[in-house]
Image 1 (cartoon, rainbow, N blue to C red):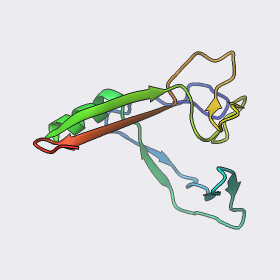
Image 2: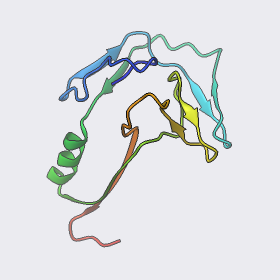
Image 3: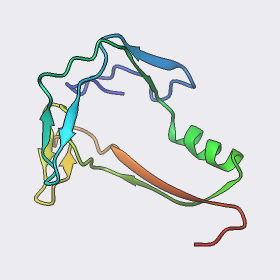
Image 4: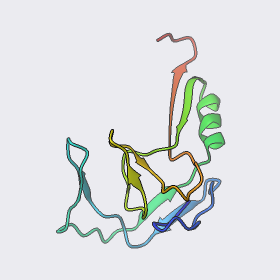
Length: 119
């Protein structure tokens, strides 16, 4: 939803619309220690296509696929600063928005089971 300066740039949900970025995406290598490194020699001439699905759309897709949702958690942190300005890193490697930003979920996790299955 936000650009790298935390300015609202995209809608929360694209309602299935495709967000197209003509410049393509950059290549980034994530090392085992969590350090991210740009691959400078990489040049991607192809556009990037992304979807902004709201959490309700994701949950409904799972349910409509016949799955039983077993976990849905939101987290106010991320594991990468992903180039956002003013993010701060905790001692355990999590990234949080700056103190002047409101608490927003930056990450969520879900799990689901096929109906009739067990853990």
